[in-house]
Length: 471
Ligand code: NAD
Image: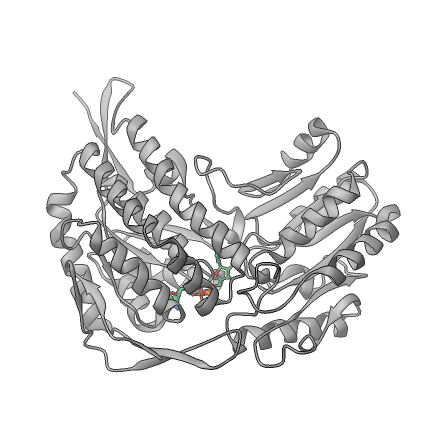
Protein backbone atom coordinates (compact mmCIF):
# COMPACT_ATOMS: atom_id res chain seq x y z
CA UNK A 1 0.00 0.00 0.00
CA UNK A 2 1.60 3.27 -1.10
CA UNK A 3 1.06 6.69 0.41
CA UNK A 4 2.00 9.65 -1.74
CA UNK A 5 2.12 12.67 0.49
CA UNK A 6 4.46 15.05 -1.28
CA UNK A 7 4.08 17.58 -4.03
CA UNK A 8 6.94 19.34 -5.82
CA UNK A 9 7.40 23.08 -5.39
CA UNK A 10 10.47 25.25 -5.94
CA UNK A 11 12.91 22.37 -6.42
CA UNK A 12 11.77 20.36 -3.40
CA UNK A 13 9.40 17.58 -2.45
CA UNK A 14 7.22 19.13 0.22
CA UNK A 15 4.13 18.14 2.22
CA UNK A 16 1.09 19.92 0.81
CA UNK A 17 -1.04 22.12 3.01
CA UNK A 18 -4.14 20.29 1.80
CA UNK A 19 -5.38 17.61 4.19
CA UNK A 20 -7.70 15.55 1.97
CA UNK A 21 -6.67 12.07 0.83
CA UNK A 22 -7.78 10.42 -2.43
CA UNK A 23 -7.77 6.62 -2.69
CA UNK A 24 -5.85 5.02 -5.54
CA UNK A 25 -7.80 2.00 -6.78
CA UNK A 26 -6.58 -0.66 -9.19
CA UNK A 27 -8.72 -0.69 -12.37
CA UNK A 28 -7.87 -4.37 -12.83
CA UNK A 29 -9.01 -5.61 -9.39
CA UNK A 30 -10.75 -2.63 -7.77
CA UNK A 31 -8.52 -3.19 -4.75
CA UNK A 32 -6.90 -0.22 -3.03
CA UNK A 33 -3.34 0.43 -4.22
CA UNK A 34 -2.67 3.36 -1.95
CA UNK A 35 -3.65 6.96 -1.33
CA UNK A 36 -2.51 10.43 -2.27
CA UNK A 37 -2.58 13.58 -0.16
CA UNK A 38 -4.10 16.33 -2.27
CA UNK A 39 -2.82 19.88 -2.55
CA UNK A 40 -5.18 22.81 -2.03
CA UNK A 41 -5.57 26.35 -3.36
CA UNK A 42 -2.70 27.65 -1.21
CA UNK A 43 -0.40 24.93 -2.58
CA UNK A 44 -1.32 25.95 -6.11
CA UNK A 45 -0.61 29.59 -5.25
CA UNK A 46 2.80 28.69 -3.80
CA UNK A 47 3.65 26.70 -6.91
CA UNK A 48 2.64 29.62 -9.13
CA UNK A 49 4.73 32.04 -7.05
CA UNK A 50 7.79 29.75 -7.40
CA UNK A 51 7.31 29.50 -11.16
CA UNK A 52 6.89 33.27 -11.43
CA UNK A 53 10.15 33.88 -9.58
CA UNK A 54 12.00 31.26 -11.67
CA UNK A 55 10.74 32.82 -14.90
CA UNK A 56 12.82 35.93 -14.28
CA UNK A 57 16.05 34.04 -14.95
CA UNK A 58 14.85 30.98 -16.87
CA UNK A 59 13.34 33.15 -19.61
CA UNK A 60 16.87 34.47 -20.28
CA UNK A 61 18.57 31.08 -20.66
CA UNK A 62 20.20 30.25 -23.97
CA UNK A 63 19.01 27.58 -26.40
CA UNK A 64 22.08 25.52 -25.48
CA UNK A 65 21.20 25.60 -21.80
CA UNK A 66 17.61 24.55 -22.48
CA UNK A 67 18.81 21.71 -24.71
CA UNK A 68 21.05 20.51 -21.89
CA UNK A 69 18.13 20.49 -19.44
CA UNK A 70 15.97 18.56 -21.90
CA UNK A 71 18.77 16.04 -22.38
CA UNK A 72 19.17 15.64 -18.63
CA UNK A 73 15.46 14.88 -18.27
CA UNK A 74 15.62 12.33 -21.07
CA UNK A 75 18.57 10.56 -19.43
CA UNK A 76 16.76 10.44 -16.07
CA UNK A 77 13.64 8.95 -17.71
CA UNK A 78 15.71 6.43 -19.68
CA UNK A 79 17.09 4.95 -16.49
CA UNK A 80 13.65 3.95 -15.20
CA UNK A 81 11.98 2.49 -18.28
CA UNK A 82 10.44 -0.58 -16.65
CA UNK A 83 9.03 1.44 -13.75
CA UNK A 84 7.32 3.84 -16.18
CA UNK A 85 5.71 0.98 -18.04
CA UNK A 86 4.74 -0.99 -14.92
CA UNK A 87 3.16 1.94 -13.11
CA UNK A 88 1.05 2.87 -16.14
CA UNK A 89 -0.19 -0.70 -16.38
CA UNK A 90 -0.90 -0.97 -12.66
CA UNK A 91 -2.39 2.42 -11.92
CA UNK A 92 -4.17 3.22 -15.14
CA UNK A 93 -4.83 -0.20 -16.67
CA UNK A 94 -3.05 0.62 -19.93
CA UNK A 95 -2.01 -2.59 -21.66
CA UNK A 96 1.63 -3.61 -21.60
CA UNK A 97 1.75 -3.09 -25.38
CA UNK A 98 0.27 0.40 -25.14
CA UNK A 99 2.32 1.44 -22.10
CA UNK A 100 5.53 0.36 -23.83
CA UNK A 101 4.62 2.32 -26.96
CA UNK A 102 3.70 5.38 -24.87
CA UNK A 103 7.04 5.23 -23.09
CA UNK A 104 8.90 5.11 -26.41
CA UNK A 105 6.92 8.07 -27.77
CA UNK A 106 7.54 10.00 -24.58
CA UNK A 107 11.28 9.52 -24.88
CA UNK A 108 11.44 10.26 -28.61
CA UNK A 109 9.53 13.48 -27.97
CA UNK A 110 12.64 14.89 -26.29
CA UNK A 111 14.71 14.25 -29.43
CA UNK A 112 12.12 16.06 -31.56
CA UNK A 113 11.95 19.15 -29.38
CA UNK A 114 15.77 19.25 -29.18
CA UNK A 115 15.94 19.00 -33.00
CA UNK A 116 13.46 21.82 -33.26
CA UNK A 117 15.42 24.00 -30.85
CA UNK A 118 18.55 23.42 -32.90
CA UNK A 119 16.90 24.96 -35.95
CA UNK A 120 14.30 27.37 -34.60
CA UNK A 121 15.04 31.05 -34.99
CA UNK A 122 13.80 33.05 -32.00
CA UNK A 123 14.56 36.29 -33.86
CA UNK A 124 13.09 36.80 -37.32
CA UNK A 125 12.81 39.61 -39.83
CA UNK A 126 9.25 40.33 -40.89
CA UNK A 127 8.65 43.20 -43.26
CA UNK A 128 11.33 45.66 -42.22
CA UNK A 129 11.16 44.80 -38.55
CA UNK A 130 12.89 42.51 -36.15
CA UNK A 131 10.46 40.09 -34.52
CA UNK A 132 11.53 38.53 -31.24
CA UNK A 133 9.72 35.37 -30.17
CA UNK A 134 9.71 35.78 -26.40
CA UNK A 135 8.67 33.27 -23.71
CA UNK A 136 5.10 33.84 -22.57
CA UNK A 137 5.54 33.45 -18.83
CA UNK A 138 4.25 30.88 -16.36
CA UNK A 139 2.34 28.05 -18.00
CA UNK A 140 -0.39 26.06 -16.24
CA UNK A 141 -0.38 22.47 -17.46
CA UNK A 142 -3.60 20.60 -16.69
CA UNK A 143 -3.89 17.03 -17.92
CA UNK A 144 -6.12 13.92 -17.83
CA UNK A 145 -5.37 10.38 -16.69
CA UNK A 146 -5.21 8.57 -20.00
CA UNK A 147 -1.56 9.25 -20.85
CA UNK A 148 -0.42 11.21 -17.85
CA UNK A 149 3.36 11.17 -18.11
CA UNK A 150 3.25 11.41 -21.90
CA UNK A 151 1.31 14.67 -21.60
CA UNK A 152 3.57 16.02 -18.84
CA UNK A 153 6.63 15.40 -21.00
CA UNK A 154 5.29 16.82 -24.25
CA UNK A 155 3.92 19.98 -22.64
CA UNK A 156 6.73 20.59 -20.16
CA UNK A 157 9.45 20.00 -22.76
CA UNK A 158 7.84 22.58 -25.05
CA UNK A 159 7.55 25.05 -22.17
CA UNK A 160 11.25 24.54 -21.33
CA UNK A 161 12.22 24.93 -24.99
CA UNK A 162 10.36 28.23 -25.10
CA UNK A 163 11.92 29.50 -21.85
CA UNK A 164 8.68 29.31 -19.87
CA UNK A 165 8.26 27.95 -16.34
CA UNK A 166 5.39 25.66 -15.37
CA UNK A 167 2.89 24.54 -12.79
CA UNK A 168 1.59 21.07 -13.55
CA UNK A 169 -1.69 19.64 -12.28
CA UNK A 170 -2.05 16.00 -13.25
CA UNK A 171 -5.15 13.93 -12.56
CA UNK A 172 -5.38 12.83 -8.93
CA UNK A 173 -5.88 9.28 -10.27
CA UNK A 174 -2.33 9.30 -11.73
CA UNK A 175 -0.49 10.01 -8.47
CA UNK A 176 1.96 7.09 -8.67
CA UNK A 177 2.85 7.93 -12.27
CA UNK A 178 3.27 11.56 -11.21
CA UNK A 179 5.58 10.58 -8.35
CA UNK A 180 7.87 8.72 -10.76
CA UNK A 181 8.15 11.54 -13.29
CA UNK A 182 8.66 14.06 -10.47
CA UNK A 183 11.65 12.06 -9.26
CA UNK A 184 13.16 12.01 -12.77
CA UNK A 185 12.58 15.72 -13.28
CA UNK A 186 14.16 16.40 -9.89
CA UNK A 187 17.18 14.32 -10.84
CA UNK A 188 17.59 16.33 -14.05
CA UNK A 189 18.76 19.28 -11.95
CA UNK A 190 16.72 22.12 -13.44
CA UNK A 191 16.84 25.46 -11.62
CA UNK A 192 14.34 25.55 -8.78
CA UNK A 193 10.84 26.70 -9.66
CA UNK A 194 11.15 25.92 -13.40
CA UNK A 195 8.61 23.16 -12.96
CA UNK A 196 6.25 22.60 -10.03
CA UNK A 197 3.80 19.73 -9.65
CA UNK A 198 0.69 19.87 -7.50
CA UNK A 199 -1.58 16.85 -7.06
CA UNK A 200 -5.11 18.00 -6.44
CA UNK A 201 -8.68 18.17 -7.62
CA UNK A 202 -9.67 20.01 -10.78
CA UNK A 203 -12.21 22.24 -9.05
CA UNK A 204 -9.60 23.34 -6.50
CA UNK A 205 -6.04 23.24 -7.87
CA UNK A 206 -7.08 23.33 -11.55
CA UNK A 207 -9.49 26.20 -10.90
CA UNK A 208 -6.78 28.24 -9.13
CA UNK A 209 -4.44 27.76 -12.09
CA UNK A 210 -7.20 28.85 -14.50
CA UNK A 211 -7.94 32.00 -12.49
CA UNK A 212 -4.58 33.13 -11.13
CA UNK A 213 -3.36 36.32 -12.85
CA UNK A 214 0.29 35.15 -12.66
CA UNK A 215 -0.43 32.30 -15.07
CA UNK A 216 0.07 33.53 -18.65
CA UNK A 217 -0.99 30.44 -20.55
CA UNK A 218 -2.88 27.23 -19.96
CA UNK A 219 -2.05 24.09 -21.84
CA UNK A 220 -4.95 21.75 -21.16
CA UNK A 221 -5.76 18.26 -22.32
CA UNK A 222 -9.06 16.83 -21.21
CA UNK A 223 -12.77 16.86 -21.86
CA UNK A 224 -14.53 19.50 -23.92
CA UNK A 225 -16.74 20.41 -20.94
CA UNK A 226 -13.82 21.18 -18.63
CA UNK A 227 -12.00 22.90 -21.51
CA UNK A 228 -14.90 25.33 -21.79
CA UNK A 229 -14.82 26.08 -18.04
CA UNK A 230 -11.07 26.73 -18.21
CA UNK A 231 -11.36 28.96 -21.29
CA UNK A 232 -14.05 31.08 -19.59
CA UNK A 233 -11.89 31.55 -16.50
CA UNK A 234 -8.76 32.19 -18.55
CA UNK A 235 -10.25 35.00 -20.61
CA UNK A 236 -10.68 37.16 -17.49
CA UNK A 237 -6.92 37.71 -17.41
CA UNK A 238 -6.41 37.10 -21.14
CA UNK A 239 -4.40 33.95 -20.64
CA UNK A 240 -3.37 32.24 -23.83
CA UNK A 241 -4.95 28.80 -24.08
CA UNK A 242 -4.11 25.61 -25.89
CA UNK A 243 -7.00 23.20 -25.45
CA UNK A 244 -6.74 19.58 -26.58
CA UNK A 245 -10.23 18.21 -26.11
CA UNK A 246 -12.46 15.32 -27.06
CA UNK A 247 -13.15 13.62 -30.35
CA UNK A 248 -15.51 11.37 -32.30
CA UNK A 249 -13.16 10.48 -35.09
CA UNK A 250 -14.51 9.13 -38.39
CA UNK A 251 -12.74 6.33 -40.20
CA UNK A 252 -13.70 6.26 -43.89
CA UNK A 253 -13.17 2.96 -45.64
CA UNK A 254 -13.37 3.81 -49.36
CA UNK A 255 -14.89 1.25 -51.72
CA UNK A 256 -11.50 0.30 -53.18
CA UNK A 257 -9.84 -0.30 -49.78
CA UNK A 258 -8.27 -3.65 -49.00
CA UNK A 259 -10.62 -4.70 -46.21
CA UNK A 260 -8.22 -7.32 -44.91
CA UNK A 261 -5.86 -4.47 -44.03
CA UNK A 262 -8.29 -1.66 -43.33
CA UNK A 263 -10.59 -3.47 -40.89
CA UNK A 264 -7.91 -4.78 -38.50
CA UNK A 265 -6.47 -1.25 -38.52
CA UNK A 266 -9.92 0.21 -37.85
CA UNK A 267 -10.29 -1.97 -34.77
CA UNK A 268 -6.88 -0.93 -33.48
CA UNK A 269 -7.92 2.71 -34.03
CA UNK A 270 -11.17 2.13 -32.15
CA UNK A 271 -9.82 0.14 -29.23
CA UNK A 272 -6.39 1.73 -28.70
CA UNK A 273 -5.71 2.56 -25.06
CA UNK A 274 -8.76 0.46 -24.11
CA UNK A 275 -10.89 2.87 -26.14
CA UNK A 276 -9.92 5.69 -23.78
CA UNK A 277 -8.21 7.76 -26.46
CA UNK A 278 -9.24 11.18 -27.73
CA UNK A 279 -8.09 10.13 -31.21
CA UNK A 280 -9.96 6.80 -31.23
CA UNK A 281 -11.63 6.10 -34.58
CA UNK A 282 -15.09 5.42 -33.18
CA UNK A 283 -17.24 5.98 -36.28
CA UNK A 284 -16.45 3.45 -38.97
CA UNK A 285 -17.88 4.61 -42.31
CA UNK A 286 -18.21 1.73 -44.77
CA UNK A 287 -19.71 1.48 -48.27
CA UNK A 288 -23.20 -0.02 -48.07
CA UNK A 289 -22.32 -2.88 -50.38
CA UNK A 290 -19.27 -3.89 -48.30
CA UNK A 291 -21.23 -4.16 -45.06
CA UNK A 292 -21.56 -7.95 -45.05
CA UNK A 293 -17.87 -8.50 -45.62
CA UNK A 294 -17.02 -5.85 -42.99
CA UNK A 295 -19.35 -7.49 -40.46
CA UNK A 296 -17.73 -10.85 -41.05
CA UNK A 297 -14.20 -9.48 -40.59
CA UNK A 298 -15.11 -7.38 -37.55
CA UNK A 299 -16.71 -10.37 -35.80
CA UNK A 300 -13.73 -12.55 -36.55
CA UNK A 301 -11.21 -10.00 -35.23
CA UNK A 302 -13.15 -8.91 -32.14
CA UNK A 303 -13.74 -12.55 -31.15
CA UNK A 304 -9.98 -13.00 -31.12
CA UNK A 305 -9.28 -9.71 -29.31
CA UNK A 306 -7.86 -10.51 -25.88
CA UNK A 307 -9.51 -8.58 -23.07
CA UNK A 308 -8.04 -8.94 -19.61
CA UNK A 309 -5.14 -8.31 -17.31
CA UNK A 310 -3.18 -5.43 -18.85
CA UNK A 311 0.07 -6.97 -17.54
CA UNK A 312 -0.17 -9.83 -20.05
CA UNK A 313 1.77 -9.15 -23.22
CA UNK A 314 -1.05 -10.40 -25.47
CA UNK A 315 -3.84 -8.34 -23.91
CA UNK A 316 -5.27 -5.86 -26.40
CA UNK A 317 -8.00 -4.30 -24.26
CA UNK A 318 -7.57 -3.68 -20.54
CA UNK A 319 -9.99 -2.25 -17.97
CA UNK A 320 -11.60 1.18 -17.83
CA UNK A 321 -9.74 3.53 -15.49
CA UNK A 322 -12.38 3.46 -12.73
CA UNK A 323 -15.91 2.27 -11.97
CA UNK A 324 -17.35 5.65 -13.00
CA UNK A 325 -15.84 5.27 -16.46
CA UNK A 326 -17.07 1.66 -16.62
CA UNK A 327 -20.62 2.80 -15.76
CA UNK A 328 -20.40 5.59 -18.33
CA UNK A 329 -19.49 3.14 -21.09
CA UNK A 330 -22.26 0.75 -20.01
CA UNK A 331 -24.77 3.58 -20.11
CA UNK A 332 -23.74 4.41 -23.68
CA UNK A 333 -24.13 0.78 -24.75
CA UNK A 334 -27.66 0.91 -23.27
CA UNK A 335 -28.31 4.22 -25.07
CA UNK A 336 -27.26 2.60 -28.36
CA UNK A 337 -29.67 -0.29 -27.78
CA UNK A 338 -32.48 2.13 -26.86
CA UNK A 339 -31.79 4.20 -29.98
CA UNK A 340 -32.36 1.11 -32.14
CA UNK A 341 -28.78 0.31 -33.10
CA UNK A 342 -27.96 -3.38 -33.24
CA UNK A 343 -25.12 -5.06 -31.38
CA UNK A 344 -22.92 -6.99 -33.78
CA UNK A 345 -20.64 -8.22 -31.02
CA UNK A 346 -20.03 -7.37 -27.36
CA UNK A 347 -22.77 -5.66 -25.39
CA UNK A 348 -23.65 -4.93 -21.80
CA UNK A 349 -21.89 -6.41 -18.78
CA UNK A 350 -18.42 -7.69 -18.04
CA UNK A 351 -16.65 -10.39 -20.01
CA UNK A 352 -16.83 -13.77 -18.29
CA UNK A 353 -14.15 -14.29 -15.63
CA UNK A 354 -13.33 -10.58 -15.43
CA UNK A 355 -15.97 -9.52 -12.94
CA UNK A 356 -13.58 -7.89 -10.46
CA UNK A 357 -12.06 -5.20 -12.65
CA UNK A 358 -13.65 -2.46 -14.77
CA UNK A 359 -13.67 -4.57 -17.93
CA UNK A 360 -16.00 -3.83 -20.82
CA UNK A 361 -16.80 -6.20 -23.69
CA UNK A 362 -15.35 -4.67 -26.87
CA UNK A 363 -18.57 -3.71 -28.58
CA UNK A 364 -19.53 -2.99 -32.16
CA UNK A 365 -22.86 -1.48 -33.20
CA UNK A 366 -24.37 -1.73 -36.68
CA UNK A 367 -27.52 -0.03 -38.03
CA UNK A 368 -26.20 3.22 -36.61
CA UNK A 369 -27.08 6.56 -38.11
CA UNK A 370 -24.97 9.62 -37.55
CA UNK A 371 -27.67 11.41 -35.54
CA UNK A 372 -27.70 8.82 -32.77
CA UNK A 373 -26.00 9.77 -29.51
CA UNK A 374 -23.59 6.84 -29.85
CA UNK A 375 -22.41 8.41 -33.12
CA UNK A 376 -22.23 11.97 -31.82
CA UNK A 377 -20.93 11.80 -28.25
CA UNK A 378 -17.54 10.74 -27.02
CA UNK A 379 -17.93 7.44 -25.14
CA UNK A 380 -14.27 6.95 -24.16
CA UNK A 381 -14.42 3.18 -24.12
CA UNK A 382 -14.13 0.26 -26.59
CA UNK A 383 -17.37 0.92 -28.45
CA UNK A 384 -17.39 1.23 -32.23
CA UNK A 385 -20.30 2.39 -34.40
CA UNK A 386 -20.51 1.22 -38.00
CA UNK A 387 -22.31 3.62 -40.33
CA UNK A 388 -22.93 2.86 -44.01
CA UNK A 389 -22.75 5.30 -46.90
CA UNK A 390 -23.63 5.19 -50.60
CA UNK A 391 -21.23 7.66 -52.22
CA UNK A 392 -17.85 9.19 -51.45
CA UNK A 393 -19.52 12.61 -51.09
CA UNK A 394 -21.92 11.19 -48.53
CA UNK A 395 -19.03 9.61 -46.60
CA UNK A 396 -17.27 12.99 -46.39
CA UNK A 397 -20.50 14.67 -45.34
CA UNK A 398 -21.08 12.15 -42.52
CA UNK A 399 -17.44 12.39 -41.44
CA UNK A 400 -17.74 16.17 -41.13
CA UNK A 401 -21.17 16.12 -39.50
CA UNK A 402 -19.85 16.27 -35.95
CA UNK A 403 -19.11 18.93 -33.37
CA UNK A 404 -15.60 17.46 -33.06
CA UNK A 405 -12.61 17.50 -35.41
CA UNK A 406 -9.52 16.06 -33.77
CA UNK A 407 -8.52 13.18 -36.01
CA UNK A 408 -9.85 11.15 -38.94
CA UNK A 409 -8.77 8.06 -40.84
CA UNK A 410 -9.07 7.21 -44.55
CA UNK A 411 -8.35 3.86 -46.21
CA UNK A 412 -8.08 3.31 -49.95
CA UNK A 413 -5.87 1.33 -52.30
CA UNK A 414 -5.45 4.52 -54.32
CA UNK A 415 -3.24 6.95 -52.36
CA UNK A 416 -4.22 9.92 -54.53
CA UNK A 417 -7.90 9.31 -53.94
CA UNK A 418 -7.34 8.90 -50.19
CA UNK A 419 -5.37 12.16 -50.18
CA UNK A 420 -8.21 13.97 -51.98
CA UNK A 421 -10.76 12.69 -49.48
CA UNK A 422 -8.49 13.45 -46.52
CA UNK A 423 -8.14 17.04 -47.74
CA UNK A 424 -11.90 17.49 -47.45
CA UNK A 425 -12.18 16.34 -43.83
CA UNK A 426 -12.34 18.93 -41.09
CA UNK A 427 -9.93 17.47 -38.57
CA UNK A 428 -6.56 18.46 -37.16
CA UNK A 429 -4.96 15.21 -38.31
CA UNK A 430 -6.04 12.76 -40.99
CA UNK A 431 -4.34 9.37 -41.06
CA UNK A 432 -4.07 7.82 -44.52
CA UNK A 433 -3.90 4.01 -44.62
CA UNK A 434 -2.38 3.76 -41.17
CA UNK A 435 -1.99 5.09 -37.67
CA UNK A 436 1.07 7.18 -36.98
CA UNK A 437 2.42 10.11 -35.04
CA UNK A 438 4.63 12.82 -36.48
CA UNK A 439 6.12 14.85 -33.60
CA UNK A 440 7.04 17.68 -35.97
CA UNK A 441 3.51 18.01 -37.40
CA UNK A 442 0.84 19.97 -35.54
CA UNK A 443 -1.67 18.12 -33.37
CA UNK A 444 -4.97 19.60 -32.23
CA UNK A 445 -8.59 19.94 -33.07
CA UNK A 446 -10.99 21.71 -35.38
CA UNK A 447 -14.29 22.87 -33.86
CA UNK A 448 -15.03 21.68 -30.31
CA UNK A 449 -12.00 19.41 -30.26
CA UNK A 450 -9.97 22.35 -29.12
CA UNK A 451 -8.09 25.55 -29.68
CA UNK A 452 -4.51 25.74 -30.91
CA UNK A 453 -1.95 23.09 -31.76
CA UNK A 454 0.83 21.19 -30.06
CA UNK A 455 4.11 19.78 -31.46
CA UNK A 456 6.55 21.13 -34.00
CA UNK A 457 7.02 24.81 -34.79
CA UNK A 458 3.33 25.64 -34.39
CA UNK A 459 3.30 23.96 -30.98
CA UNK A 460 6.42 25.81 -29.83
CA UNK A 461 5.10 29.17 -30.99
CA UNK A 462 2.04 28.67 -28.81
CA UNK A 463 4.41 29.23 -25.84
CA UNK A 464 5.94 32.36 -27.37
CA UNK A 465 4.77 35.95 -27.68
CA UNK A 466 5.95 37.77 -30.82
CA UNK A 467 7.38 41.24 -30.26
CA UNK A 468 8.10 43.47 -33.26
CA UNK A 469 10.82 46.11 -33.00
CA UNK A 470 10.01 48.77 -35.57
CA UNK A 471 12.68 51.24 -36.54
P1 NAD B 1 -11.37 15.97 -17.52
O1 NAD B 1 -11.66 17.08 -18.44
O2 NAD B 1 -12.41 15.53 -16.57
O3 NAD B 1 -10.09 16.32 -16.61
C1 NAD B 1 -8.87 16.74 -17.17
C2 NAD B 1 -8.09 17.53 -16.13
O4 NAD B 1 -8.82 18.72 -15.82
C3 NAD B 1 -7.91 16.78 -14.80
O5 NAD B 1 -6.62 17.03 -14.30
C4 NAD B 1 -8.98 17.43 -13.92
O6 NAD B 1 -8.68 17.34 -12.55
C5 NAD B 1 -8.96 18.87 -14.41
N1 NAD B 1 -10.18 19.63 -14.10
C6 NAD B 1 -11.42 19.16 -13.87
N2 NAD B 1 -12.26 20.17 -13.58
C7 NAD B 1 -11.54 21.32 -13.65
C8 NAD B 1 -11.84 22.71 -13.46
N3 NAD B 1 -13.06 23.11 -13.14
N4 NAD B 1 -10.85 23.59 -13.64
C9 NAD B 1 -9.61 23.21 -13.97
N5 NAD B 1 -9.25 21.91 -14.14
C10 NAD B 1 -10.20 20.97 -13.99
O7 NAD B 1 -10.87 14.79 -18.44
P2 NAD B 1 -10.52 13.31 -18.03
O8 NAD B 1 -11.79 12.60 -17.70
O9 NAD B 1 -9.42 13.31 -17.05
O10 NAD B 1 -9.95 12.76 -19.44
C11 NAD B 1 -10.76 12.34 -20.49
C12 NAD B 1 -11.02 13.44 -21.50
O11 NAD B 1 -9.79 13.96 -21.99
C13 NAD B 1 -11.77 12.96 -22.73
O12 NAD B 1 -12.79 13.84 -23.06
C14 NAD B 1 -10.71 12.95 -23.84
O13 NAD B 1 -11.17 13.11 -25.13
C15 NAD B 1 -9.85 14.07 -23.42
N6 NAD B 1 -8.51 13.92 -24.01
C16 NAD B 1 -8.13 14.74 -25.03
C17 NAD B 1 -6.89 14.58 -25.63
C18 NAD B 1 -6.42 15.47 -26.75
O14 NAD B 1 -5.21 15.53 -26.97
N7 NAD B 1 -7.27 16.16 -27.47
C19 NAD B 1 -6.04 13.58 -25.19
C20 NAD B 1 -6.47 12.76 -24.16
C21 NAD B 1 -7.70 12.95 -23.57
